[in-house]
Length: 376
Ligand SMILES: [Zn+2]
Image (cartoon, rainbow, N blue to C red; front, side, top):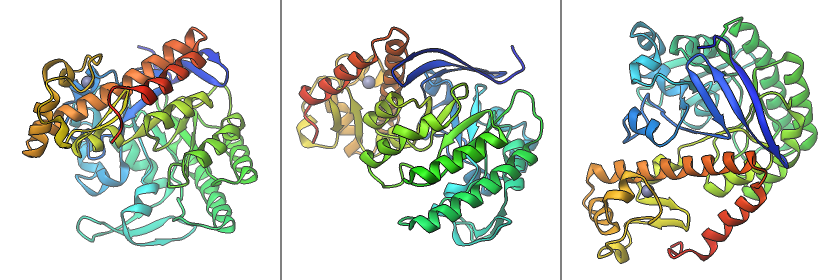
């Protein structure tokens, strides 16, 4: 087991890249999709099952864990890996995004953010220093800088001020993170959909120097076209020899488009959340299992899928347990969705390595357009 954190780029095909991030807790094959384990669990999944889908790394949420059960308690119990029974790498976000989207009565200053918990109304403060401390207590392998996420819609002046504050916080995050061999700190590029602001942010982050670079402030409702428009230039602004992480993305075609533009890592609640609301992602598009037309259908969700839901259960059964609100419905559909997302990642990694990514993309899009399961 190597003690260092490193990134090795193995092949590129156009702007798309494939490689390996090495950490003391294991390797992360890139492009990588990270399932989200918000409250120290990927909902409806055992950690062993998440691993069986092909996931190399999970994401945990600082905001949720600091409120319940608290970072200090998790630390006393041996850290997040032992607490949730996931021994492989974990990336934790900084809490900045959830403070913006979930917390009440948030008050923003140069120092940080004070807010009231959405769970019990208790008062908390997050600063770059406190976020680094929490992520250290959790034992996170990849730590994210504490950043500010402006509420949308925001005008360019507000986006610029917010980005500059986030860059000052990035410098404080780096200082507070210190020297921790085997653990990585990622900076987060901000700047909305304005190229000059993205460039200014990237320059500042490169000056401070990070183990990896995230692209933040996207996938917040701007739409796929605007997001791809930013990615067309944003990835080039970041160092070639460090992993690039697009936060909070996305649907399968968002993921494929992001990889085509040079992104190495992504996370999203979509496969697990959709699994609980009866939506299955397949090669042929989205299947809404609650639809009555599945009630008598003996076929699996996807004939070619090797996940347990597709190997052992019919659409009729999945339809029944969803309608009956049985827990197994969330379990099976989440498993299928996570499996499918990891299949996409594996397919892209192989295609990039073999220099046939454009053909893979064409096949991916064609399958969805002409499939035997029309989207509903
Ligand atoms: Zn399946």
